Length: 430
Image (spheres, rainbow, N blue to C red):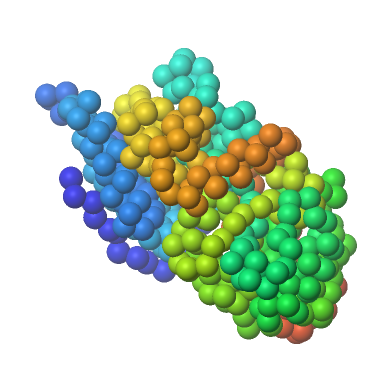
């Protein structure tokens, strides 16, 4: 079938949460019933750009070519509004048989019993995860259940503008620099290039999380916060010092960089020499600039980074075609032909054999570099944290709000920290 887009909607978060809380009708949902001729149609929902849509359609078409009795009702849309639509479908008992999800919402959907526990298929071998990094699987487990199949490995990456730095004869940043050393480097780089050395990541939850882990703490301890208000204040003060030293851009420019759109990252727009991203975004970043980019680990102890699932595929618990849906996931994750089709669009393939094949066959230098960097970092990965609890998406947005209050000077680091800590506690206790 030809892929279609759902119309975008802006729903109030309270309404979305309320709809998700509605009881799920577990029969007759998530796709058409098997027809008398034994054919099955599975509904499949994902977000992404046109390129991802085309690649996903090709992979699903390959499954149908090998399993003619199975066809797909394919629907996709841009990231914005995706989870509103998923919430609406779920509340109406019409969730897709298979849907894409990320760690912002995985625990929320799992604890509401929307997602099927895939552990049964994993144990039987029908869902082969033997080639998956252990930490990656951990990051798909919620309350002991495999709520989603990790569909791409990722980790934090500090992307820098190699062209501008080399032209100004500035030493390149290296993995292992402390946070203070990175800020001092950024100040020096700014003075020599006329471009702020680093984006201010104080609003970036993943940078905050890595920094916390390096101090022996976590963003979350189960369903509680894993840090104190004093930790937040210290984080905000670190970056106030960087702003005061002119190592970072001004608040208005930092605000631009706080956008999640890859095309607005400051290392691409030329408004900073580094941006704090997910490593698998490197190829997309490189597409948006003529300068040569490179990527390293975040400052501090790189072993505190972890194999993060860039996204997951989950099966609706109410699907009438659970076994077929699980087989589709197994095919998408482990078939070599599919691996060549999808490449690293959703991150480094979870199956390490498929990943090696992609690395060997790609002629994209940015993709090769990303795979090499993540592979190098993976040698020292520490244990993966637990999947963020329900309310994580709100915690992320509240960090941006509080950090920007400090960035614009409307609040002191202490005041901004208090605001964020209070809001974060409330978000995960709802």
